[in-house]
Image 1 (cartoon, rainbow, N blue to C red):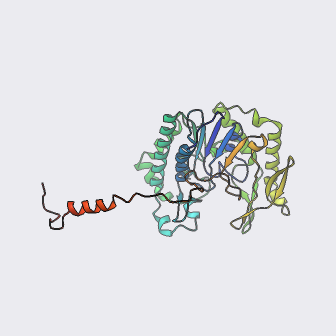
Image 2: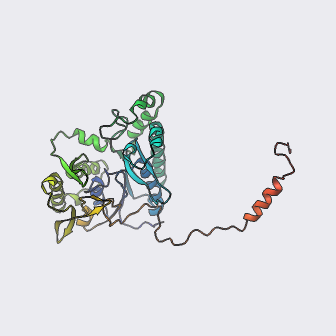
Image 3: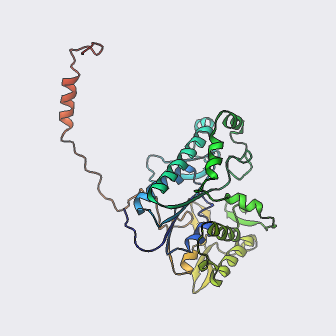
Length: 358
C-alpha cells in the first residue's frame, strides 16, 4: 500500500469515455492536479470499474484530500477473467464479445446487472464517506433514460425484459434517486452532449478490416469542454488547462481526428517531438489504432499514470497485479494432518450420521 505525500492526487475510473485514443475529460481534469491516475479501460463494464476502484483504494491508500471520479458504464456489459488472465477482458456489450458462449448471452440478466450496479454504487459511496474521499460519479448515459440501458448505441439486446425490470423492481428508481445525491455530477457524459445544439462534423476511427468509419465517441474537443463543465461543478481550478499550450493541443487533436479520413497516407500515433505533434504508426492485436500518446499532464510538466489500452507503453496495470512477485504464497500445512485426525475422531465411522448424539 502506498503512503500519501503532499501532492494533490486525482483518480479516474470508467470505460472508453474515461480513457480513449485521445485525451478525455478525465485526462484534462487530471492535468489540474500534481499527480493523476487514469484507470479507465475501453469496453469496461461496471464489474471492472467497481473492482478496480476498490483495489486502487487499497493500493494507493486513497483518502481525505484525494479526488476521485467514477464514470459508470452500461447495463448490458460483462467483464470476465479466464483462467490464465490477470485482469478483465473488457470488450463492451456482451453480444459484441466473440469469446462469450451463446448460453451465457441467452441467460444474461439485465435485472442482475442492474442490481449489482446499485450495490456497487452503494458500496463506493460508503467507502468514500468513511475515508473522506472527494468523490463524484457520473454515467456514460443514464441507464433509466429511454430503453438503451445506458449503452448509447442502437441495440435491441434484452429489451423484452425491460418491462419486468421497470414494473416489478425498484432498481431504476434507486439509481435515479442516488443519481440526484451529493456523490453524483448533474449529468451523464451523453446527456451533456445532447444539450449541445451545435452541429459537429464526424470524427473518424480506423480499423484494418473496416477501413475508416465514423466514431461515435465524444470528440476530442467535446471532452475538453466537458472537463471544464465538471471542474466548475467540483470547484476545481482550471487555470492550468486553459493555457494557450493546452488550447492549441486540443485543437490540433480535434482537427486530426475530424480529417483522419483525408489523411490515409499518414501514420496514426501521436508523438510529441520537439514541441510538435508528430505522427507515427502503432499496431496492437492486428488493429491499427491512431493513438495520442501525449497527455495534457505531460505538456504541463505534471505526472500521469494511465492504463494504455492502445499502446505497448502501459504504465498502469490493474491494482491487484504484482508483476514483481516471483514466489507463490508459502502455505502452512503443519496443522493439516491434525485436522484430518480430528475429522476422523469427530465423525466416527461406526456412528451413523443420522443418529442423535445429544
